[in-house]
Image (tube, rainbow, N blue to C red; front, top):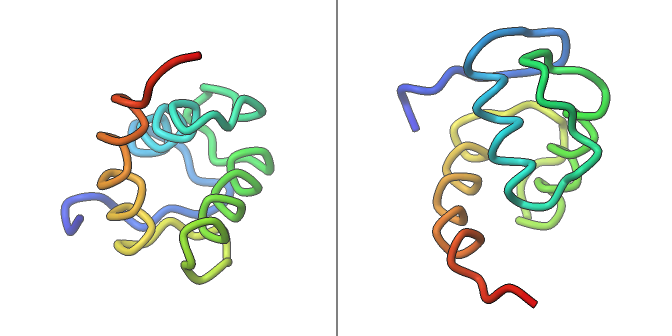
Length: 81
């Protein structure tokens, strides 16, 4: 996703809020929807990266954005129990 910025801890803004919204959709319920890339957001990113065989560094780069967005369709359309 070339149009989305690389994000890391201590950044703030709408892109961070979008990231947090995606992470919450994946079930990372420890993330606070605050638009601030804090420790909780970073930890969720690292877990997501590990689960998707990405470099585990807590930095949301193009590869992490692609995995987050590509998988959203599956998450949103998964059967609910």
